[in-house]
Image 1 (cartoon, helix red, strand yellow):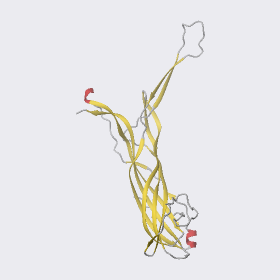
Image 2 (cartoon, one colour; image 1 turned 180 degrees about the vertical axis):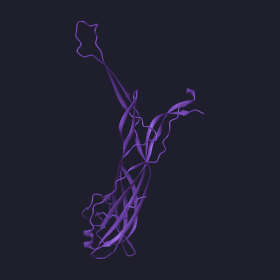
Image 3 (cartoon, one colour; image 1 turned 30 degrees about the horizontal axis):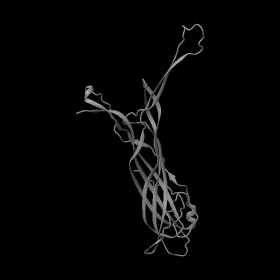
Image 4 (spheres, one colour; image 1 turned 120 degrees about the vertical axis):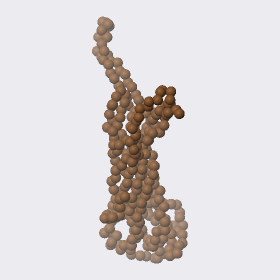
Length: 276
């Protein structure tokens, strides 16, 4: 597993804190959770914020467990001349035959996700914070096939020993790992992180095939495609602030995250089911 917190610097972001009074919204990435009344805890108040950490993996895949069926249109044109009609001259006469093959769309499904998060709460002086400002960081990632390639065996049974059924068939299963780095800057004196709950939200999950090859009569195959997965990690952070009038330092929550995703690519295909 990759360790994004080794040998790299941290990013920077300021988020709005939920309070009873109205303040300016410092970041569009923060969702305000209504009128939350701060709770008392030993040593300070409990406040809450919601943070969205975006991620994406766009990578080419060239390995399929089962060949996908690709919808195709094929048109054949025949040029002919009618020599029997002597009264008129045909300038252009053609016969066209258009054949369309329609298959179910290929879709992607999230099978599982693993999220590893290293958190550090830091106290810095104002000058240290200014010198440490950087943009957020997302590492590029690749999709690795984790399926077994299935060999299609010829059916030797007679025609009456099977039926044809349309079933979801796994085209492939792929694993991606991405490293994220996130920094949250607090405007109050934070003395501890109480709890962080997080959910994974996918906003885009699709595959686009390329390099289509015609292998026979009305048969099209593909050798590769691009798997595009995009989304964000929604975090609700509860933290404890000290009930003091003022302070000179800045307080930061550093998060180094490794996210593992397993995506299944599926298509409904006609398959032969053996009758026992």
